Image (cartoon, one colour):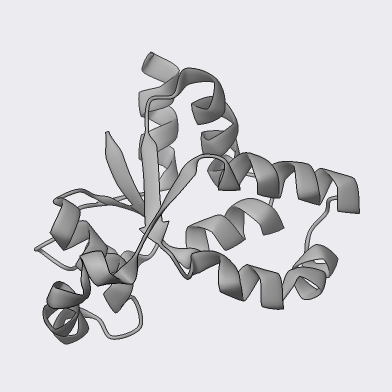
Length: 138
């Protein structure tokens, strides 16, 4: 199953040692979900890597290990593939418009804990707990 990742879910996985990170760890073994994201998602991480590292409970090597584990599971999609749906996505939610546009284009859910995104009827949002439950059943 294909799922769009939003920036905050990846950020959350790296900052807390909780359910989101567990999804990536289990999925790395079970390969149940195919994660996709807009091609620019890691630009912000690169720009704020040191700040992120300070926010985590991980050592630098643990942080790098988990960051690489997450990155290895994400297929980056060029913005040109979903730019045609960006105006519609902006109407629905300006701050998360690229992720919404990609989800609309690929007709797939978004992996996110964002309650605001979950209110948009045109897309499905799967929070970490649902994905963990699905991975536990496999």
